[in-house]
Image 1: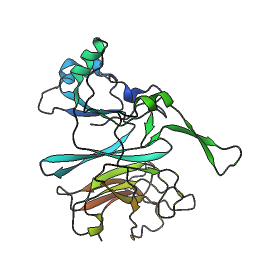
Image 2 (image 1 turned 180 degrees about the vertical axis):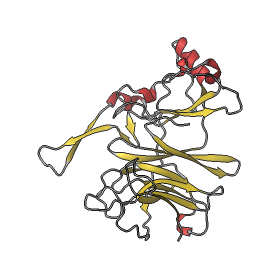
Image 3 (image 1 turned 90 degrees about the vertical axis):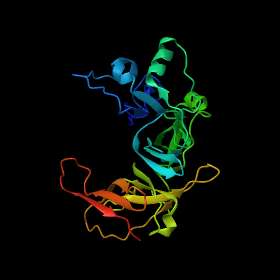
Image 4 (image 1 turned 30 degrees about the vertical axis):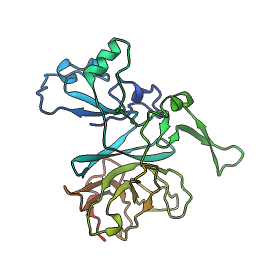
Length: 291
């Protein structure tokens, strides 16, 4: 289960780094335990949950802004985990990890009561709010001297320093503004899937992702973006490449809202919706991505 940071922009209360806050986390649930409770309370902190619920939860990661979905890739006898984290104003990011050491919620609560810090060795930290993907979080304002430019100011310097060595480095980050002709400006990451099929040889072994809408003021109607990146063996940040599609959506907008795959990850399925208004019904289509 994933939860967003729960606040307004820039996580003003730093909930995502607070061990007691449910917000801004990736959580494992032991579904084998019976936790049925009549009228469960509405809470925001782990220590406010009923004890039987606490005992079913372990926290995999913190420092999450807004995870748009988690995917798994079978690699011999282990699973590679991929998670797309929606950015604030600067970048969208994709993270990958195999090994992790989750912390039981009961242990987090005990440490809080003892005013101590639990062992975070092997615990995943995405770095938010001090870091937005690969970059220290910055507030973006217009540049008074040149209206075509903007000014970026590091927002949380102390927290960026504190989490700099603890955070997980992203697999790739892509920008809300990117003037490179072979890239696109991002809006929001909406799906991440590894591809292990043979029908599209260029994509085999790569991680495919979707963005809600390309940020091009001159482009009407709206079109989503499809791209891919490769996991580097040295685990360093990698660039991405755009996948151009030739389907004719006509005059209707096409927001790319989800990305799916089959069980053995040999096929890719793209969810497209024609509107951003929740009251506009029956405008969705699921496509298979084919060569």
